[in-house]
Image (cartoon, rainbow, N blue to C red; front, side, top):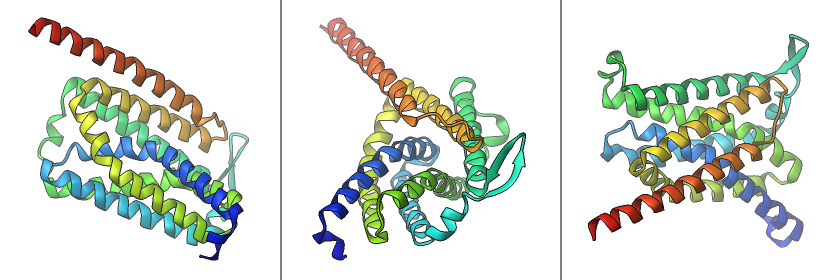
Length: 241
């Protein structure tokens, strides 16, 4: 921990922490959607355990930097594109996210299919933890690779990840409660996950487009929804008076 005496290390730490928190938006939205399926008394525990598992996974990736960087080596060529292990992880992770978001949107609009109504709570709890953990690893790959280029001390990277996860644990309940209270926000969140899934697939196929575009679109939609919520609240107040 000698890096605490080096200004450049502090700059890298603050930058990485901010990066992890911004990238954690994806995780928080997915976490909120997944844990909504659980009984209310299990949701807080699932959020905390899921994020702790995510922390363990990210630290493991950081401690295996050589292996992670090796994932960028081409494995085979498909349709003129060289695909690496990282590309395959992003590709399958993106496809799963598209499937998950599409299914959730279907259930919100059409109701759950009969064959899924008998899923037990314990299986759902375990499934939620597995989904949170695996999707976080997919989201973490790029941030870990980016972190390697921004800081040369593993302790700095791990410290930044720990602070970001603590922030996510603190914010998870508020984000989940807000999404639960507002069905239209949940639909926006699912649309956001759908866009992120498309972005991951595009990244896996070397067709990268900046994630900032997605965040900007989501931010604009949320701002518009905030105005609609204020207008509805005002109308209710006027009707009550």
